[in-house]
Structure formats: C-alpha cells, structure tokens
Image 1 (spheres, one colour):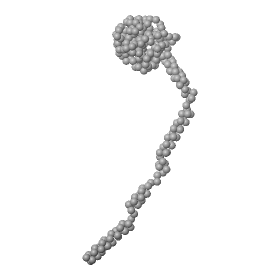
Image 2 (tube, helix red, strand yellow):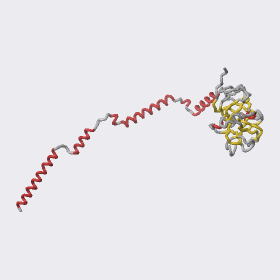
Image 3 (tube, one colour):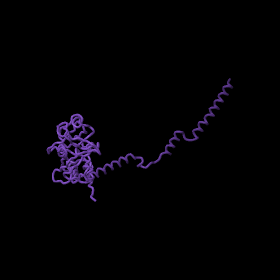
Image 4 (cartoon, helix red, strand yellow):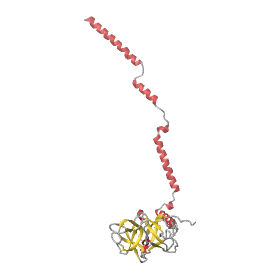
Length: 285
C-alpha cells in the first residue's frame, strides 16, 4: 500500500512538474492579447491635420462669413429713399402710366376694356340670358385675371383696314370675344336688370352683321385710339352707348355687373383699354 501511494505521489509530482513548464513557456512566448490590441490601436492611429479634425467648426465659420458678406452688400446697395411703401407705390404708378402713354390700339390687338367708374372688365361666357334674346350673356367682371374678359379689336369686313393699322376717332369697329369667338352685339331686347338695351354675344367667325358694329368715340382731343384714352362705344343700329353700373346679378352671374346700352351720354358709359397684347403699328410700304 505504501508503495502504491509513493508511486501515485511520484506520478502526481511528475504531472505537476510537466504542467509548470507549459505555463512559463506561454508567458515568455510574447505579449498578451490585451497588449497586442493596444499595439494595434497605436499603429492604426492617424495624425489628421487640424482642419480635418475640426471641420464642423470650419464650416460654421465659413457660413458666418457668407452671411456677413451678404448683409454688408445689402446695406451698401439699398436705397433708403425708395425703400418705403409709399415711394415704391409711387414708382410703380409712374412706371405703369409711362408704359401706357402713347401706346396705340391697333386692329388685331387683344385687350380688356375697363369700366372707368367701377373698374370692372367687360366680360362674357357661355351662359345664355334667361330672358330677352336668350343669346350669350355679357357682364362686367371684378377680377383682373379672368381670361373670359379678353376681346379682339376687328374692323368691319367691308373695309380696307388690316391688322396693325391704327384706329381713328369715329371709326366703326367690332369686338370679338377671344374665348367663344362671338361678337359684341346689341339690339332692342330689354336688358335683364335695368330694362335698357340688351348687350349680348352673337354670331361667329363667318357670321356677323351690323348688330356687331360699334363707333369709337374718343374723349378729348385724341385723333387715334391710344391705351390711356377715355372712350365711348356707340352701337350703330340702336344708337345706345355701351354701359355698365353697380347693379349686380344675384344668381347665374353672381357678383357681376349688368352691361347694357343706353341712349344718353353718361359717366357710366366711359371705358379704358387695360391689360392686353397691343400689336405694333404696321408700317406702310
């Protein structure tokens, strides 16, 4: 029994002695994994320039310099005398007046006619009158930007006048509604609201009669029709002047004013050429 114990003890000590060298050899074979990771981190570290390490600060600096430069430019170039709303409005009015001065209205011009007293535009649309002739209705419209308020200035078909010719005082003209191609027309039917002469749109490109003829009457000393001149249009067949007033439709054309013909000269039958495309004068050859 003693021999077996000594043998086991001897074997155990030999096993222990065999394990110890392996531990010491592992220690002496090189750095630990933690040390290896530290060395690798140091090897991969790059020494970037200052501007790359602080790029966000640089970007903010450049933006600040840009805003400063813009503010300085606006300060040096802004005209304080014309910066007020009243001065700007006066400048705009002067420019508009200057642009309309001496602009000739020629045959072929597409324009809007503005009622001088109410500032509504002569207007038509594919809505028939519910009474009278039952033809396409004509009204005056409050909004400036409606495309149904454009009219083409045409001469009568039996004249030598052509597109681009000026229009003298007293000339007979026709107004063709641009959207529907019908003619501004009048007759002896009663207008819906006031009972005056009805004004309608009638006919088409190849259908026109004397009920579409209107005489141009320029107020003042003008000899030819210009944009800034006050005019009247007198209907050839009935003698009525193109007229509007503040009497408005309530249903079909709600908010739009009645347009009619009256046989007397009144303040309510004066019109002005407003927005449009004014064709240049055709040079005589």
